[in-house]
Length: 400
Image (cartoon, rainbow, N blue to C red):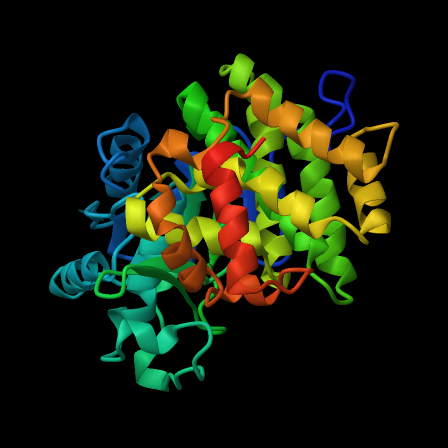
């Protein structure tokens, strides 16, 4: 369901017009809609939300604006921002303690992927005594009784890349193991995702590029996951089309609200699509990020061409569909990979993991961890530890 359809000549794409969508959760999209959050809280019977963001965002203007708007709406509000770029299980415990001590009844996760992951992980543990790692994706789903219902959750992405705003899945680093794991619960669903492209205007060019490449990777990897899932496949292709159309413009023209809006919606669609699964780009990137604290989208972008060369032989039909979504006339596999490499060149993505200070000596260890990642299980081509090690070594030497 959608509302507020605009077909005017001034906004033929409808990107500047507010829209309310109900699939897969309630989504409010449009420039300037952050001011509506207090009204949404009142509608949802939220009285004392905890804002969760990351260390790099807590002093940005939108946090102060959100606090002020909530207070003006008569709500109590707290703020927790002790979240790393790659959230740690120890940080989630601290956030849970603040949620409980502050008597909060909801979480508003605002920021990039780390804020989304942090906020969702705190939600999973806030109203129960269940260990965070009991919610690990590969484990049996914990039973939640009526006295342990998850807090209401509102998600507000401020980067166009993570796509984490519509689901409960969150990536968290197990500090003791030095590995990232996915935690989730099917009963935790955001009550609202609010997509306001004005919040992404201040994003620096490098973060615009890195998060945008993350969205592109989500769409590609989700579409390549085997199995019949036309809903996710359609969203992946439309997300890829939007990202392909607007990414370079968003990097080059940071004030272009249409580009920012197109990227934010494309990222959201790609994020929904990867409920189908991901692949080796993410399996490798998760473990690189857990060990070396690299920016997730940047790591994905570096690794992407290497994994595409491994995965795409035999996937000619899917390559054709992706190439068409990106507007390519030549839909061959070779041309598609060259185009992806050209996109990465155009947004100044480094050519190798060595540029991110990843040493060759860690390739074997990273490969052993990556094969255990849930994303490796849905890769379109089965891979062994030696094969993954070869991919990592190639990415360290020269990814493209």
